[in-house]
Amino acid sequence: MAAENKKVVFLTGATGHVGRNLIPRILREDELSLLVVLVRAESDRDLVDRLETLLSSLSPAVDPETARHRIQAVRGDITLERFGMSEAQYHELASRVTHIIHSAANVRFRMPLAEARKINVEGTKNVMALARLARSAGRLERVAHISTAFISGNRSGIIKEDELDCGQGFSNTYEQSKYEAEIFLRQACRDLPLVIFRPSIIVGDSRSGATSAFNVLYIPLKYIARGLVRFIPCSSSVPLDVVPVDYICQAICHILFQAKDSQGQTYHLCAGRKKATTVGEVIGLALDYFRRIWPDKKNLRLRFISVHWMIALRMVEPCLGQAWKKVLLKMRAFFPYMKLIRFFDTAKAEAALRGTRITCPPFKSYFQILLQYCLYTNWGEQEPSVSPSRLAPLPQSQQT
Image (cartoon, rainbow, N blue to C red; front, side, top):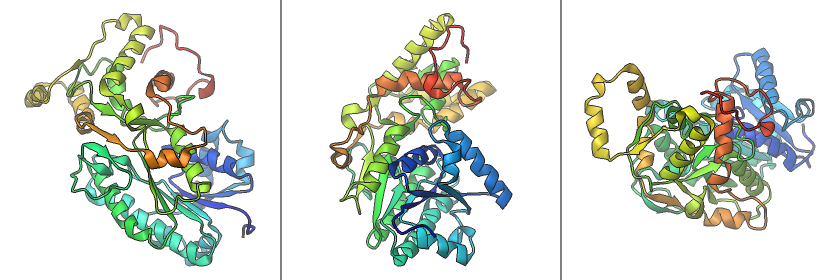
């Protein structure tokens, strides 16, 4: 059993984009803290292998040898009661935990609603069951739930941090299931020291570009780079709220471990109105970058078209080739995000971070770094040849 003065942080979703970036920051937050990560594994041997893979992926931010003494992996599944653990193992875990960070989620947009609910709603309920047991053991200090700003669904205008049920509809089952999880948590926060974080569109590290999730914004950018997209069905002035993963993780750790009045609060970890980019800026910066590094693509162009043109294109879709059909299918999930004029209020998050150096950087300041990492890894299909922090400018002959 851990010493009484040590933090013991229980983390779900440790192999996910946010989870794996939280690990180095949690370990740096308190040099005496212990980290327990929940990992889905078929056997104890598989658990060991998965932990080693995770530790190696954290280098050089975390020394694997040092981390082995401070990170414990436990085998479990958030969709199962007690995570599938024995009662003795489950109670022993609850007796040690001081902090819980629930970042595990299924982030696919097109999954069936029942599947989305199984992980994002039922999984959240199972994590809160552990929190209640840990609270009764007398050690629990804080519980963090990583939600999404897009529980706002199809709302437009200014989205406040304390707003939840405003009669909104949803563009996909991911949004709906995360919203339903927050509805449950509104009740749970009455007897748990709960903090909810709502990030917007999460991209890679603003300093290195590194990411383990080449989805959402990365998918249309990849198709643009490869010349497979020549139109976007929206206005260039539509706002996009994009945040780098390092800002998200720094903010979570500060608010969770150091902010005194965070219990029961919800924070938008977003760029906000002042720092939100636009669809036009994203496309313009991307095209400028691709033309600069590939002189043979200097004529790369992209047009913004109306929704009416998009409907006409869908009517002729059966006549399109397989490559176009694939691109349209992938892109269609993002069209709802390209038509809403909305901004996420960040007043409470900014107040909680005031006095620190933690702030969301302007999108333009790190976007080229993100693209550089994408091309060095061929959009996640290969490992970078050097440490992300040491990436050099790409040669002009580099191809996608």
